[in-house]
Structures are given as C-alpha cells and as structure tokens.
Length: 293
Image 1 (cartoon, rainbow, N blue to C red):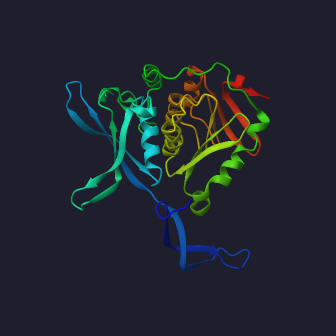
Image 2 (tube, one colour):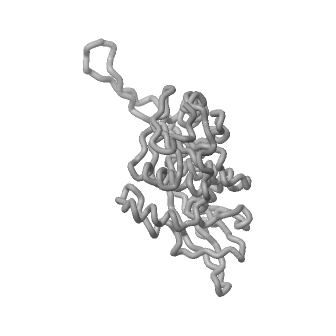
Image 3 (tube, helix red, strand yellow):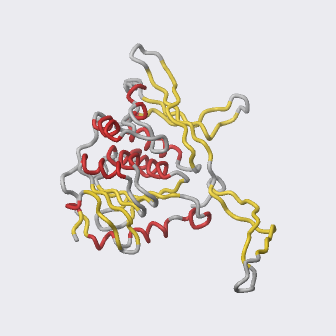
C-alpha cells in the first residue's frame, strides 16, 4: 500500500526530444511533478541487562530505509545478526522520544530484550567482517558466520520444479506497488515450493527489504523458513545470503547476478542460489539438487 510516508511528490524539469524525428534539440517543462521513494535513517537500539544486572541501551545499527514496517526491519536485522532467536526474546519495540521536540522520533527504534536474554556486543557479526562497499575478506566472513550457530538446512530439500520458477519475477513486479509509482525501490519476497508468492516488502535498500520479510515471519513465530525460498529484485550479496541462512531459508533467487562470495557461502552452507531469474530463464550457481528440471 502506498502511503504518504514512503513516497514523496517533488517538482522536476522533464527533458524530452522534440517532435522532429532526427533532431537532438530538447525542450524543458518545469510544471510537472514526480513521485520518489522516501529515504530516511533508522537507528536501531538494543535495550538489555548486563550479567551484573545493569540496564543498558546501545545503538547497534543505522540504516537508510524507506519508512514502513520498521518493527519487522529491526527484528529481521537482529535475527540475521544472531541476536534474536525467538519472538519471546523481545519485551517490546517502540520508537524513542525526541526530548527536545517532546515527540516520538520515528527514525529511532528501541528493541527491549527480556531480562534473562544476554547480549554480548562483541558478538555482532559486523565486528568480524565489513560490507562489500568497504571491502571484505571472504574466508574471515565465512568463518565468522559459521560460529553464529546457523540453522541446519534440510539436505536437498525442499525441491522446486523449474516450471514453478519461471513466473516468479513477474509476480514480484505485480506486487511492487511503490516501485510502480517511483521506480526507485528494491523488493524481497518469500515464495513456496509451488512458486506462489507469500510475502513481499519493498525498501530503498536491498538488505532492508530482506530484513522486513524475515522480521515479519519471525514476529509471527514462523522461523525457520526451511520450506520457503527468497526472491530479491536486485543482485545477491554475501549479506543477503547471510540473512537468508540465519532465517533457515535454503533457496535464494535473484533477478540480478550473484557475487562471488555469495556463491561461496551457498556452497559452504548447502544453500541453493539462483541468478538472472527473469523472463522464464535462470542460472543455478549452487545447490542444483533442489531444482527439478
């Protein structure tokens, strides 16, 4: 659903070729408007008790996101980092209060853990690897992920018929309501073994869209998702594969290309990875045993 929070109307100068077929002349019209995707920061804070009973609150992430489904985004992010294991770990999630404005700050979200749940800041995955935008050591990243007690994926299961995969990119496009208005959002979706889409979320960030999908199911106590597959609208990175693995998703498909490290991760942890899933075609980069062709 499109809301005033995730899209914004802006004035633009639209430049087009004039009516002369072979002319390179252009004309501008300043009396037009366009719809763009909203991008705002979301700070995720974690409130927890230390071993000696002291209450602390710590910022664990700042991400640029499209507003909407922030609770799902936060939950999905914390699942991917190996911090949350059950929805019962959470006492509450709430937006923080801007003391200067005496109003809720919808760009700062606090996740309160049960007193019995322990959080060790040094265990955050980001302490073991850097994102692809900063450079990454592949072996160190895979080793760090391996010690996070990842869910064990069912060997060779589930199996999906290739025919069920041929239309999923079209189904995803049909569900991208905000993308259709703005052209500026990524999407992530869960689909079942018959190729039916079960959940779709959009966001200006690829990783955020994945977090929203996983977080939604986590809050519904539906993890692990070992009978589902994940479809993303862009390319597949190490971090997207990491998030899928921590949620127990054995199959990841992408409209775009995979990175080399995402392929390494798929092989190492027994995942199935598909790329260039569009127009009825796709490539299998790992885990072909789950695809019945």
